Image (cartoon, rainbow, N blue to C red; front, side, top):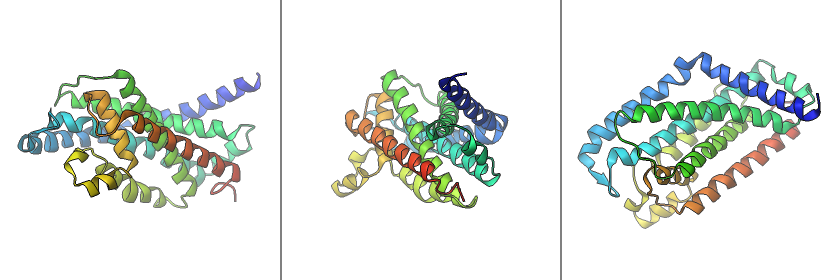
Length: 258
């Protein structure tokens, strides 16, 4: 088997392992996000949304659905990689990959692809749940799919970096709790930044999640507070930056090689 064939088998093996890992415990990985988002749809969409009325010409529940779907994609893509890679470190399984004749990009790509797989499965599941509460009419399938996948890639890579630095299971929960959750809730999921005073609009523009949520909202509803080219520039820029940093960490063996 030539080198490309070896790399392909290695990549497929890592991805298969990652997919089987979260599929076997789907009651813990897929079902809870679906139930949580259903509660969001009921509370914020039906109960509170009925009092708020329309937002930017859309029913409130229709306006928040894109952000809620993407929120589930972000959290699950991140959680899958950070927990899986850290578990490999903790159980010392990572040594098997380090001694294998594989380039670092295959290792990174395999774990990221596993995170994307879980993000897609959970995202599709939440989307199906949302159909019980709203009628989705996709404005642009291309934009919707691109933002869906790119966002999952970005946060899977971020989860990988977190796992590299983590020294305990407590460390893998710090970033989701103190970074991801505030960024997501302040990323325009539940409101349009046009409602904010100029100062807070400027502050909001420093939040990368804002660009992802708005680009995804454009794909579904055809409305965005952010220019589409700006959103994609930010998303791709973060993917390149985080990917390069993750490759550097693997090359240096930081947090992996003792």
